[in-house]
Image (tube, rainbow, N blue to C red; front, side, top):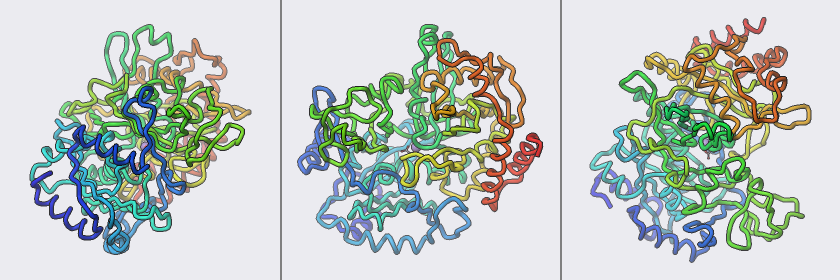
Length: 584
Ligand code: OXD
Ligand code: MN
């Protein structure tokens, strides 16, 4: 409970609108968690998992029509359309309040409204920010408890200030036709209705920590990015930090928790996880860029997570985890495609129906998730809670590209790096509704998450570059190139460390590189492939620039860049320079 008058007035107004039977103020205590869990188990909203094998773990299914973020129903609502730019859906602010207001009216009758105070960022950090989410879903409360610093700790942080993000979420009827995820950055407000799926309803994550925070970052001179943060420790116990922006479900969690190849592990290399999805970045007093992970947990994609691909993630979700839309085994544990070879002979699928492998359907929804506390991660960084975060040496952009993009290249400088990020593309995944596997331009992996005009966003990147005396070097990676048989060529996972080592060697001035039309490419001998099944020629192929494909690529970039009325001239100039390098 809080005495904060701004919070109290707003909660009262929202309760007047939605008319819940009762209001529960969330305090973040253990007792409260037990009480709410028990209630959700008794109503069937949550299912208890095998407490001997998965202590503290529970299970939830969303409606079949509600399994991923809905980009076409996500809006930025401002007074002026030009403020949201060509990549966002816009709704006039007053029209949006009126439209959603009508949907919210009385929608919590017969339900409880939970008032969730939470902090994004460490409680000890002056850079952290408070949100309050009102919701009629216990599932949301229990997830927010893992994903944020939640409860009285946030009231203490907020004190009497009016500076908090006001989030309203109502499940209503989970009606896809009336599903809206609306952001009002001018009012620090988020309204989400008719969904129960994580990315649409855990308002601290995509809605606040990316869309609203990117807007705040523009105003306040910092950046909110869709980036993992990792620390790479060498045998001398020196740790350097890298951030990487990949679109949803392209392996950020796997890279953030990477286990080095055996040879490197023996030498003493280690990767420490600071964050797996979002980075808030500020310029430090030392002129470097510093990164904080605003979240407290991981909302990771389950399918494909295995002891081979990401043992640390699997170990993290052995206790106190919420599983959503995965497959339920008869022994009360969970399974998903790509977890292991022990495909259950029979189980209950994500829709709640009996399932056998012969059926040929997916047992787990392709975007099924685990919500796990970061502190349970075996490789969590000791800087995870550091109020200042970590200094960033390298930034990586990347995505899934079956062709075209080489394994790794380095941008010529910050400005060229911003162009590389601005033109980045990736094949779509199941993290959002819509077709999967279609190449789309996803600048800085922020296409669905930038809360304002992307032309201004590129300009903000350029402006930030000028403020950072020692900016990180910017790279691009692609683990997903395929051969003639559509098989991935690069082994990926732990072996990605070999590429990270080259990246750090470049940052530390230890290796030369070849200047290509699109950036600096490694000399193949500088990437260690000993112990992989890749031979030198294959590596050379992975690093090659196919001029014909790049000529096509640059044409497509032209169409992409033409969308931005506010494209900074520097980005245009970078594009023209690369085009010229390609002989066009
Ligand atoms: C996520 C996403 O959930 O990007 O992290 O969709
Ligand atoms: Mn994400």
